[in-house]
Image (cartoon, rainbow, N blue to C red):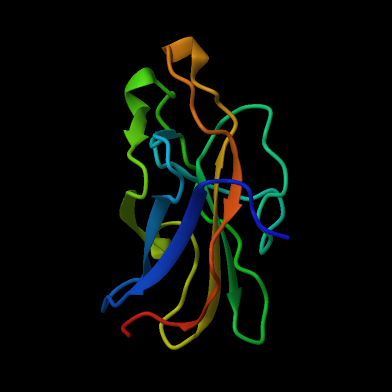
Length: 154
């Protein structure tokens, strides 16, 4: 079955000597402009090691990660994130066949350890349609590709 959403998400490892970093890219694969919530807050998924499967009642974050030690357990979220309130300025247009991205240090949110390897996947979710800000934003959940054997320092 094909995914009807024009929004796609891709993650890639960014080598870093001191932390586990990924680049997250949101791509508009459709012929029309998409309005995306780009507050870019990272939050704790409802179940550690699993990506969200439904939209939350309240928009607290836009990115959730599943991080699992290779051959081991999923990593818990270790910080209490207080995202800035969602505002109209967080909604931005992404032109057809264009993409936006950012780097995220997973070491800032999870207890990753040097010498261990991880499997990582990300979900982008947006429940806020933006109407109260005068825009018609994309809503839904999209899951990224899975990266395996990621480690700090490579």
